[in-house]
Amino acid sequence: MKGYVITLDAFLALMLLTFVMAMVLSQDYGDSQYGALYMRAMSMRMLAAFEKSGVLAAGISRPSELRAALNGLPPNVCSQLTVYNSINSTVMDVQKDGCAAPSSPSVSYRTFYANNSLYLAKSTAWSK
Image (cartoon, rainbow, N blue to C red):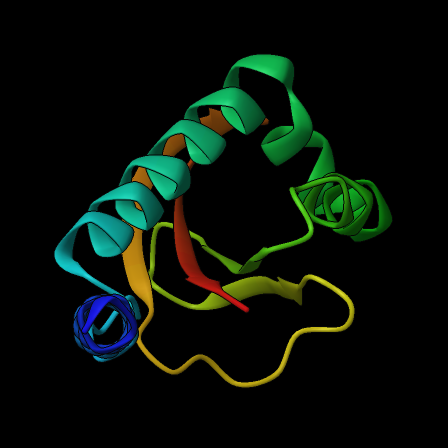
């Protein structure tokens, strides 16, 4: 009789473990609203940092500096930066190397002055 109780106890424990594992593995841990909020905040902070460090102003005449700054972002973050002048024509458009087309991008804007002219920087950020 003892053998049956131990076998039944082990079988119930195994069933409970299987049920718990199935519940955990069935959860969707993909892009959530927190991921979108993180990307928006990342995009806004990136634009602010690039403006305050002078990268945006320098990038107008030397896009290679702006591309180097974008390539310095964390490996799981992709970004495309477009700069428009005051008449809304594109001055430059650079993207981080090794990034494919965005699936669900977060877009942020920031205005800045360079060379006595007003520019608009548009950042499109997404995760790999």
